[in-house]
Image (cartoon, rainbow, N blue to C red):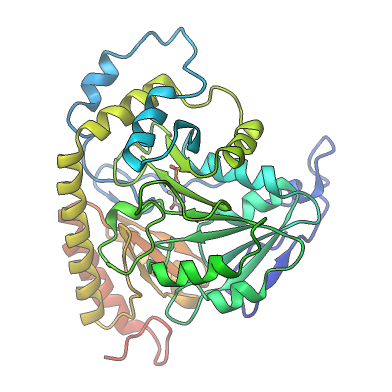
Length: 385
Ligand SMILES: *Cc1c(COP(=O)(O)O)cnc(C)c1O
């Protein structure tokens, strides 16, 4: 497989290569996948700004709840009923319209698996979340990548044009990881109107809590769940709620679609500890909202200062900012790393910097302000200033 880099025009990825160094027979498209590489771990002195994690300690009550949690010699409740009931009440849907997974990535995998096999197509914007191409390939389907617009937003006209009779799932990511902009409610509604009613639309809202743009799509804005039967909304406890290490996320949508997802899932992968921590986090909503406000304010300050320094930073509505580093992205990431800032480079395209501890902001700005001056004239990262 060719790992998707920046590219012009919609592309279909299903190229197959042989791997003679694997001692057994492996599906060729799996053998061709690059071996998993985890984001860099930060040393003691460094700030880890590479995985969009929450810099705060767990919410109050979470650690206590984990200490009091039930015996780990028992299997968890396979259906995570308490958490589903809690979320169902919160979003005004039936309990069957909520599905819990070991992180929303695992629900993404289930939905793609349930809808898309060999010959089927999964459409999404690119660049977006790194897991999307991998999910399609692992399901045996073809990944159809639709380039973002020049300002790093979803191009819905091009996405609509990419739909064929082989399309089975479409993923919309708002705010878009790693570039930052939201999809507006109006854009999303107009797009869903033209998607065939039997094609799944996954609205991935991993960063929903950080959004401050009032025009942004909110798949769970109105009680009763998504407005269309073919839309499933994904949220996670990993980012705003700060539970990335425990692996818990959820989907809200049509119960029969979620049944299909459940049928593909590995049973019992959501632990009782994860469920307990998620419930305790929901109890601490006031503190959560205050922390989210702090991070959103820090993000806006960071993005504004980066623009002042000469960077062309797209709208940033998650807990991260995007620097269009182009061909210089790896070098730029190395410059940040040398200063004790672990950021996430995407070769040939850009670097994503998570909004971390307050003390990291000044350091990020110092390095970013220096390296921008080394970029050649006309570089995609350079602002109009
Ligand atoms: C982080 C992230 C997720 C989910 O992460 P989990 O930890 O698996 O819940 C999903 N989508 C996007 C775009 C993300 O950035």
